[in-house]
Amino acid sequence: MNSQIKTLLLLVVTFSAIFFYARASIGITFAKQLLRKADIGVLFPEPADTTSLAVEEEVKLEPDSTSQRFLFVGDSMVEPLAYRFYDYCKESGDTMYAVTWYGSTTLAWSGETLDYYMAQVQPTFIIFCMGSNELTSKNLKTINESLQKMREKVGDLPSVFIGPPNTTPDEGLNDEIAKVFGKKGYFDSRSIVMERRKDHLHPTNAGAVVWMDEVALWLSSDSCLHPLVLNKPEGPQSYKIEHIEVMQVKDKGRRLSGQKLSKAS
Image (cartoon, rainbow, N blue to C red; front, side, top):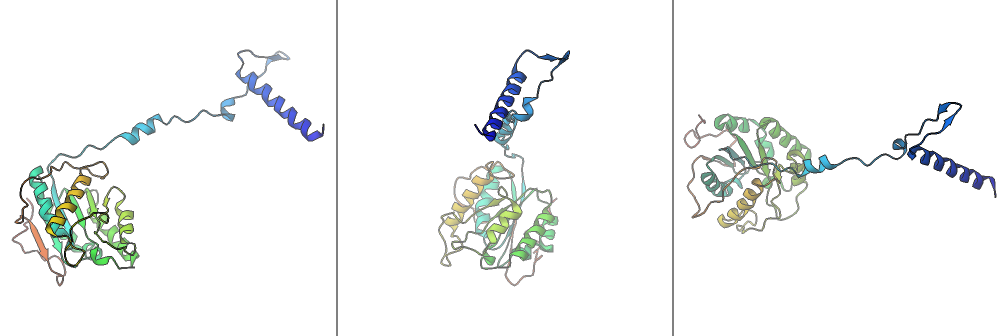
């Protein structure tokens, strides 16, 4: 038997003796001193107790049932969605102020226009919906900076972002929205099957209902960072709604008419 095998056997016997002595209920005295037992917990630690973590992960956020004052802003996609969301708000005891700015971008909404409407409405919840005018943009740095500015302006106010319903891959826009607003603060609209207009991008009135119903379902679930109680409306669609401001492509922002959207009291 060579020396390596002898050494290995000696180590096995030694560790076995230490292990059994540490587990035994008796002690051994040598030279009138009780031999100290090794703490096998250091060598073989107990598995961590993950019970509390599992319970924490299972806790679900309760939807907020208090009346909300929504500020719903963005590009031309806001207008068709606002009609349906207005009915949700009526059914749920909420108020909606919508601003649809044709041709606008995340950069446009990261400026003083957002400050202006926030001051006018004094919302309890903000919904952003834009990006359709930036689907081919590769300037992701500017997009990310604009989104960050929007988040900074909102602060601790509950807010979510409805992504654009593009049917073809973008250049990274949706990924940037998800990065800034987070998985639970961003609704990915790309998978929604809806009826579209001739431009193959904007939804028809019926398509907007399908889209908004999916968004409302998400807003009511614990998949959303700020879940809400939203009652699904029944009956005919409202097409004349209060508190909606429409800005054209040529407008530079802050084009408040002063008649449709007055400062909240």
